[in-house]
Image 1 (spheres, helix red, strand yellow):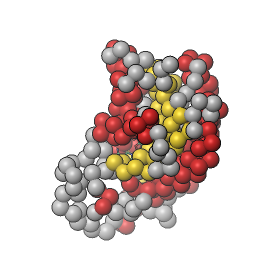
Image 2 (tube, rainbow, N blue to C red):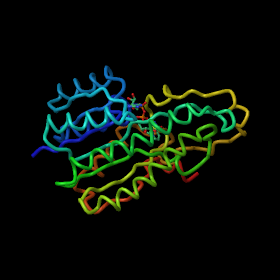
Image 3 (cartoon, rainbow, N blue to C red):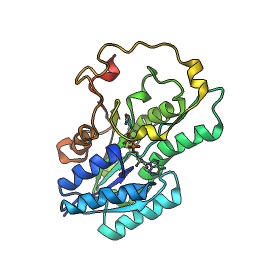
Image 4 (cartoon, protein in one colour):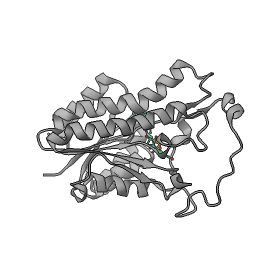
Length: 255
Ligand code: NAD
């Protein structure tokens, strides 16, 4: 039986590359995204190359839409084996003092509340046969370097790792594995979701980037390099791996 994957943020960047990688491996992919048009063009490419995909226009922080979407996948393909919980935004970069509650909530809801909702509502569809859940966190959940104003983002990303560990323990009884990936800088469209406020400039202290701030390759990673790791965590090649946060950053976080 063909495996079925749900991918949030499948219309761009890491989610797009992973959808294409999964489809090449014969996995059916459902792309959940706010930007339906972009996701549709990813779907078309997948189908043109012989894969199976469909798109659902879903805000992953909206519980009702999440519940409906997962039920639609069940109706369409009968089961869910893989959840790639990946949609996220940088959000508003602001000082803590100036940060509006709505700015904070938007980032936390998009990145962290959505993770809870997606995992919570996927369990009924995965618990009978087991499966794999992969959560996209970030190296910024665990460091402050060059991260000015990204308090809400970093908090959401650290929260995702804590959530992943609790979920891995709780869902082991159903043979559902739960892992996180922590990418460093990756060439995607994420900067389009960034709103940098003036206050950040005031708190920015001069930072000299170490020579070669991406030690392994002297450049940012590609979405495809991340997709390879997600595929490993989704596949049976990682059947004894759960509760792990895997860094995909070319040693950027070691500087
Ligand atoms: P991207 O902007 O290229 O893709 C993110 C996708 O998520 C977009 O298609 C967007 O429409 C979608 N999305 C945003 N909010 C949504 C919502 N509420 N509901 C449904 N879809 C929504 O960015 P990316 O870099 O591919 O980001 C993917 C994940 O990787 C994010 O969680 C991000 O925090 C994480 N990450 C990215 C980097 C990087 O340098 N690019 C580094 C570390 C972690």
